[in-house]
Image 1 (cartoon, protein in one colour):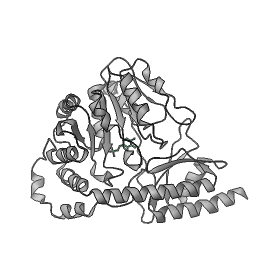
Image 2 (cartoon, rainbow, N blue to C red):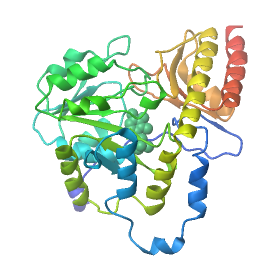
Image 3 (cartoon, rainbow, N blue to C red):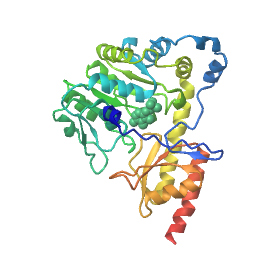
Image 4 (cartoon, rainbow, N blue to C red):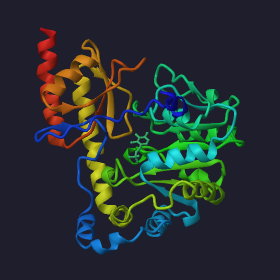
Amino acid sequence: MKWESNVRKVVPYVPGAQPNKEKMIKLNTNECPYPPAPGVGKALQEMNISDFRLYPDPNITGLTQGLADYYGVKKEQVFVGVGSDDVIAMAFLTFFNSEKPILFPDITYSFYDVWADLYGIPYKTCKLKDDWHINPTDYMQENGGVVIANPNAPTGLMESPDTIEEIIKANPDVVVIVDEAYVDFGGVSALPLLEKYENLLVVQTFSKSRAMAGMRIGYAFGNEKLIKYLNDVKFSFNSYTMNKPSQVLGLEMLKDKEYFEEIVSKIVNTREWTKKELAALGFSFPDSKTNFIFASHETIPAKDIFQALEKENIYVRYFNKERISNCLRISIGTDEEMQTLVDFLKDYVKAWRQ
Ligand SMILES: *Cc1c(COP(=O)(O)O)cnc(C)c1O
């Protein structure tokens, strides 16, 4: 077919499976096991569907202002997108317009190389050390931009604020994106560094700690100039990115700080319990500051465990990829879900040892 030679061919990102079984334990895409705040349900019921006739607010004014107030920045320093995937994709398109390669770790969120390929941005990956930490000096070579997930996925490890600052400081000529999808579970945000560095973009999301993956809400903080450039690209792409319910319900979720802190602390407690249980069963893992654990077993191959769990309708994430093919990424669910997982693994490990 001749027309095929004109097609933009890409290798797409493969999201975690979304099985939908009645009795399943879904620990494969780092969703929150708890529902959004009660105020979200109330606001949803009060929505007037007649408003759906109209286009939503292209400036996402309410949610943008809400985020600015919540985090103590100016609204001109906030960009809101349809999930942080949308925010980061827009940021790649906006800021990575150099002939030089952008840099990110070899083991990290596997969407970065997909966007780079899609937009034709050259990139180079920097090998994580054997302890899964980054080597800051790797990010001091010539580059067209830097992307760091902190805490990182799928390792769950956090880099210190000093390490992050060192990288931002060493790269004044390019934009450094810090992807903080998991920061609320025990990370330290780079947000305070905004005052010192105008090349920093901090990206966060409602999908994990704010229990609203299905609403697709992500946001970024940067200096006003950076955010303006990002909006210029957004408005050249699609003005009405975020639908009305997401704008309204996202703001409702943001209002209930107490509920948010309660679910995050529950997840952190469950994570720490799960770490102890898994360690006792012969698993090892980096010290997670996220809502997942990246575990490998001392004797049983990850793939076998993955398949055995799947038969039980317990879904975790397995990456058939170099360096991490013996690890499972296990999202933190409710206490009951993690108990069921641990109970199954106890029997499974015991049977394997016999
Ligand atoms: C989940 C995740 C995202 C994307 O989340 P959205 O649902 O698009 O907000 C971005 N980066 C990392 C590292 C993630 O794990």
